[in-house]
Image (cartoon, rainbow, N blue to C red):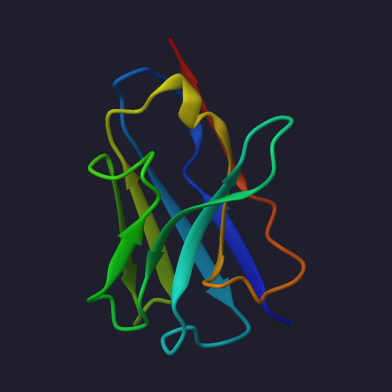
Length: 116
């Protein structure tokens, strides 16, 4: 069974940084484009960042462009999201999945809370 496990979230002050990790098991994801998504309270889940299967191509939501960096280590089946200059509006549960999302159910996500 395919599993996605996100980690690395926490409470941070505005302007701070966090690095999220996504561990995939049950399937080799090196041939899949991957993405990070987030869901804030009362809002729908939204796309944050995506990376091509080889890692050369990345793209970001306008709201995080220049602050977040997605990367991957295919040898370890890991995907990362480096988040810098965090803002209170980045507060959400963060999830990884293929991009576009194909894995169901989603992982449990990791909570990121940014205080002002």
